[in-house]
Image 1 (tube, rainbow, N blue to C red):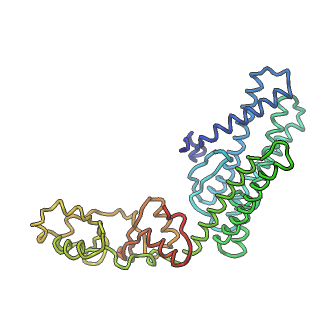
Image 2: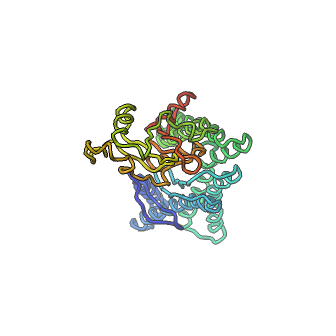
Length: 376
């Protein structure tokens, strides 16, 4: 199910996952029932209304937690793609990683600090103002949940904030951000298995039987931590490689001055099954592309007198990469633009060749590591 965009908060797109509505209903029902039982004099409709308000305040706390991450990231010059509320809480999607371990630490720490401040602030209001009754009960729930949110997120395993804090510490010690992600990801998997085991084994010490909530949380940690660790391993293996290292040895290149007849005879029939070729000028600079199917637009009896240049389609400069660009960044570029291949250029726009997604996969296979982001 796709996320639903609600609007923007401080210029950050805000989304809600459909699973959020299910949790909203369950939390409203739970707290509404609790308030009705705790305060029998409350009208039934008011108890359920206060239950809904409590649920909304709790989700507002999750949103504040994610805004904490976002504001620190923005201060570091890192864009925030979106904030999404879903079944297990919230997620702030950042454009890139922090530049230093210290910066990464503070981005991760900001969320739990916001939750802790909310918990202390709300508890102080209840303690110093003498508020009582249903309102006090609601505020106590809000304070305790924010405290739990802060403490839970400090568990040192990805994808939790504590995992990102651990990642930053390992990054500081090793000088390698990917080592930090790998280590924190593995720790996150351990906590995932522990949560699943506690959910299953609770049948032996709890009258309620299997704790499905613990199992769900464990599964969530296990899946996300595993993916993070695998992707970090993949990125680590690409470190030191550039776009030039993955260019096809026999890239589909044709000169603009060449005739269509020569192009058809020597390149189309003589090469592997390429359907599109890169076109260069006399200086080897990239001009654009020519598709084999475009030959059909010119009568074959005119091919000998028609240059390839007449069928060239330009390539936007934004869809080419420099030969010295780190291969890790090229992978992100391909994924962001949903491309299977990209042209690689060197100094002064001179074409180096074609880089295909499959070439990166082959390069990684030779290094005995899978490429999760490129498998699709």
